[in-house]
Image (cartoon, rainbow, N blue to C red; front, side, top):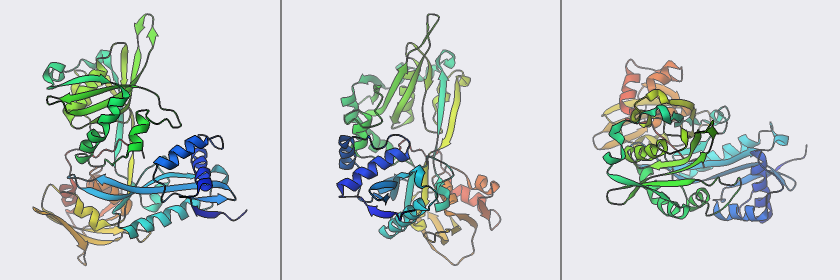
Length: 416
C-alpha cells in the first residue's frame, strides 16, 4: 500500500476540492461529479482553517474538520467548544488508523488552544467513545394523529397572547438569527450558528443535497417580536375521498413553551393533515400535554444527538450553575491524558469553583460519562446503576444528583 500523506487543505484550491469530494464520497452521497461551483460555495462559506485529510496521491481518502463553537451550558453561560465535523474515511482505506490520527491531533490542539470541550453529532454510536466523547443531549420524534388529538382548550388560539403568520423564505431568513440567539441563550446544549447555515436552510444558497422547500410560520408575541418559527412540508394523500396527509417538521425554533405550543397547535389544526411528524423535537417537549388524548402522540424515535468530550474539567464545571450549595470531589479518568484528574467542585451562592485537589474522591467516572452528567441529560444514580459511575463515599451519588439537577433536559436541534 502506498504511503498516505496528511495535508492541511486550507488555501490550496486543488486539495480543498479533493477534500470536499471526499466528504461526499465518505457520506455515500456523491464523489467526483461534485461541481466546481458547489465546491467553491462550500469552501467560501464554511470554516476551513482546520480542515485536513489524508491523500493517496491526488485523491483525498479521509477528511476531518473542526472549528470554533459556542456551547450554552446550564444557567446560560457559554463554553468555548471545538466543533468536530466532516469526519469521513473512504471505504477503500478503512482500518488503517486514519481517523485516530486525525482525531488525536485535533483534540490535543484544541486543549492547547484552551477549548473547554469538543463537540460533534455522531452519525454512528460506537465510533466516538474511544476518544472520550459521550452523548450529552437527545431528541424525541413524535407522530401525532390529529383526529385523535382532542386539543386541550387551554391552548386555543384565543388564549395565546400573540399571533401566527405564514411567511416567505426571505422573511424567515431575516428572523432566524436573532430568534436562534435568544433561544440558544436559554437552552443548555444549544450551539451557535453562522450565516451560511441560515442561507442553506432558507434557500438563499442552494447546496447538495438540495433543500426540500417548505412552508414557514412564525409566532409573534403581543409586542410583535418573533418568538418561534417552524418550517414544514406536507405530503398530500387521499384515501377513498378523505384527506390523509402528513405534515413533517423540517426545523422548529421556539424561545419558550408558549411559542412552541402555538406552533404545534397550528400544525395539528392544518386541513388535509391527519398526522404530524415532529422530526427531532426537544426530549421534554410539552406537546403531549396539549392533547386531550395523549395516546394520539406516539414516539417514533428516541436517540442521542450532541456528544461532548471534556478538555478542561475545571472550566466546564465552573461555567455552569447549580441549584444547591455543596461540594463534590470527582475522580475523572481520561485514557488520552487530556482532562483527567481529581477535582473539587464547590457550588455556592456566588457561583462555582473547581480545582485539582488531593482530597479523596466522592465519585469516579471517565470523561465520556462526565459528558452524560454535565448538562443534566442523565442522572448520577442512573449512571451508577449502569456501571458507568462509581460511588466512593456513601451518599455521594445523591449529592451529585442534587448538584447537577436541571429542571428541563438539554437540547441541541442543530446538525453541524
